[in-house]
Length: 435
Image (tube, rainbow, N blue to C red; front, side, top):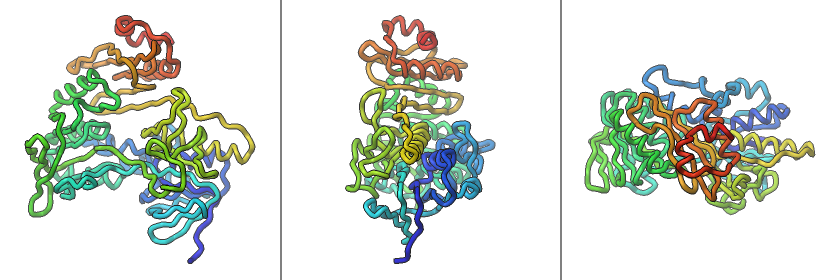
C-alpha cells in the first residue's frame, strides 16, 4: 500500500470545532506542517448556525466567505488562505471511512491514508432522516434537511423555485422553529408538524412554548401538534406534493423541511474507545480512554463540573469552547504546564423573526415565569427561573439586552438561594441583576 501523509496532529472534522481548534493551535504556536484538518465538506470551517438564519433571508442573504469561523464569536475570519499562511494543511472533500486508533491511521473513501501522533475527533453530528425509519415516500424530491452548506443551497434554491408555495416543516425543535420563521419571511405558506404537546420540549416549559406558538400563529405559521408524518405523495417527476399525517389528515406541500434531530458521528471509533450517554467518554481535558486521542463538540460526553455529572452537549458554544480546551490541554501536556479543568455553563440561544432568547444553566425543578409574555406586545420581554432544592439553577430570557443576558448567565453560574415563587415573579430580572 502506498504510504500516506503523516502529521503530528490531525483534527478529524471541519465544522465549528475543527475551525476553532485550528485557531487555538495557531495561537499556541503550531509549526508549519504539523497540523492537518480533514473535512468531508468542500469548504473551510464556517459558523454553522448561519445556515438556518441569515443564509436563507429573502434580502441580502449571508454567503461564504462571510461566515467562516471565527466571526460567530467576534473573532477573526479564517479564510482558506489563513490555513496555508500558518502551514496548516486543510484537507477538504475527504471522507474518512476507517479509523484504526491502535496504528494511529485514518483511511479515506478514496483509499488515502493519514497517520498522526495526536488525534482530535471533531466529527459532529449527522442529520436524522425520515428514510432512516422507512417512512413511505421519504426519498421524494424537495424533502430537505439542513446540516451543511450544500443542504442550505438546496433549500435556498427550492424556496426560490416555489415562491408563494406551501411548505411543511416536520419537527418542533431549533431547526423547526428557525426554519418555519425563515420560510414565512420568504412568503411561503408554512405549517409546522411535531408529535410533542408543545415546541422545544427539551428546554421550553408549556408556558414559554405557548408564547412562541402564539407569536408564530400571529405571523401566519400554522402549528399541528401531537401528530407525525407517516408518508408522502409525489407527482410523476418524483416531486413531493403532499404530507400524510398519522391522524389521517393530508397537507399539500411544495417543500418539506425535516428537523428531527441529529446523531453524533462516533461509528468510526466503535469498540476502540470508551463511550457513555451516546458519545465518546472524555475527561475534563477532552482526552478519551485512548491516550493521545481527544474528542470535542457534539460527540464528547464530558464531566459537567458545575452539576457533578457527565453530559453530552449539542450546541455551537460548547463546540467552540471544547475545541479550545482540548488544544490547550494537548499543548499544555507537551510543555508540562497545568491547564484548568473544563468548567462549562450550559448555554443555548435562538433567533427568529424579531425574537431572540438566551438560556443558561439547568432547566430542572420548578419553573417560574416573569415579565411580559404577551405575544401581541410590541416588544415582548419575559423570562423564567428554574428553582431546585431552594436554589436558582437556570434562567431563560426573551428580548434581553447584552447586560441582562450577562446577568442571567451570572445567576445560573452562582446558583443563589431562591426567593419564594411569588417574590421571584414580582422581582423578575431585578433578582438576577442583584447577584
